[in-house]
Each structure stands twice: as C-alpha cells, then as structure tokens.
Length: 330
Image (cartoon, rainbow, N blue to C red; front, side, top):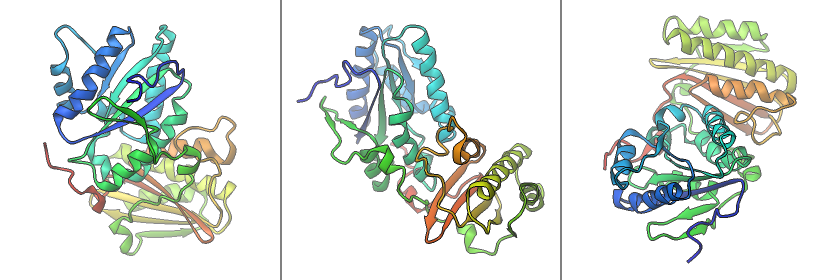
C-alpha cells in the first residue's frame, strides 16, 4: 500500500480523485482526509453540493468544523472556478497556511453536453493551482457519472484514491500539455441542425455585436445577452487579428438559449490553456478568450481541415446524450 499522504513534502498542487459507489465509500475517504488535515492544523474546505456537504459534515466528530465553499457557486464555469480557487488559496497562503485540503465535486449537471470544457478544467487545475500548497480530493459518484466522464477523470487526475485507504498513481493520467491540445468539440447542439437565424461573413466586431441583439428579441435576460455580446465581440476580434479569412459568424436561437459560432481558416490558439487562464502577454487573444469563457454558459473549441471554430452558448445548453444517469438521486 502506498503512503496515505502521498502529498507529504510536496509544495504544489496534489490532485486526486475518488470514484465511489455509495455514500459509505465517500465518507470512508472524505472523513479521515478532513480530520487528518484538521489534526495537522491545515485549513480544510468542503466544496460539495448541499446534500453531500451535509452528509460529510454530519459524519465528522463532534466539534469538528470545516470551511464551506458552495460547489454550485464555485463551478459556474471553468475559468471562473479556477480564478475563485486561486483567490481562495492565495488568501490561505497569505495567512500562513502550510497546506490546504479541499474536498470538491462538480455538479452532476456538468456531466452532460458541457462536460468537454469541465474535463479541460480538471486537466488545467494541475497547472493552474500548482503554485499553491493544496491537496485536492475530487469526488465522483459512479451512480451519476457516465462512463465517458469517469474515463476522463482517470486522465485528468494524477492520483486515484480508494475507499480502502489506498492512493495510487493513475495509470491513464495525461499531461495537461497533451490533454488540452486534443480536439474536444463537444456534442453538437441540436439547434445547429436548423438554418441559422443570421449568418455574417467578415463582419466587424460592431456588426457581430449587433447580430446578438438582432436575433435575441427579448429571448434571454438582459445580463445574459450583454455577456454574449462581449463574448462575440472578443471572439470576432481575435478571429480577425489572429486567424485567417474569411471569418464566418452564425447565430441560432432556441426557446432557452442563443448559440453563436465563429469560424476562420486559422489553426486557433497555440496556448493549450487558452480560455482557462489569461495569458500574461496578451498573445494570440488569450485575454479575450479568457473573458469569453466567463461570459458564456458554454464554449466549445474545435479544429477540422482548414478551419477553427468557437461555439458560444448563452442560456441553457442542451442536456446532451452523455448525461446518462444524471437525475437519479441515490
């Protein structure tokens, strides 16, 4: 059996996952993980959904308290989640914490059509949080997570924990520099099988912004529309500046969302962390794409022969076939 504390002596991010089949298995790992941290005077944080946070807290010894970071609020989008965790950990580091322990879970709704960018998030965490002394335990309920999600969990977490106390290197772990360069376009949105409500070729950013308001017609809340306007403007600006013409912008609407694709004949950004982290030098539109990721409810990036496409969604992305068992409550 490997060390029960494989993060001992490590100064960066130790990122591991447990895929469990029952509440009892979750508690068997999460409770000692938290109590050991408290005994070592390490800040401990729960970033779980309401039900599982209450379950874990009720299983802790009397008088033991942990900090709460509501999972649903933390995980509104990959880029914002990374930014929130960086701010959280920077605060603990400034207060003198030697190491921070976090037990987290992605909301099961993210296991659907938006899983592609959450898989990118899980991979990017290995780099984005490595400046902090943090031990992250990501929890995945096998009763809710589809097989495709669980496969990506093994590829994005360097370590796997089990209910019997073992912690072993993941045999399928893939370095973020490789994983994030993979073409992961996400499942197609059904609305794209219909004719676009509007199609533009080589529009100026101003014309592309106006296109959002032109197709909206009161469909979405004003804040969502304003955010999409920003995202479309940033994306079209980047396509003109860093891509290759022609730049094509297409708009679709459904009852609960607006979908916009921006395509050009370039290869897309070379930075594998584009969208998830801001580039410090502003190269290849990294800041604009980072803003876009925080302005939309879903963003996909795809490459094919001779083109690069960003799909921006405002509103409610479709559930998608990958959702599988989501909705069943154990």
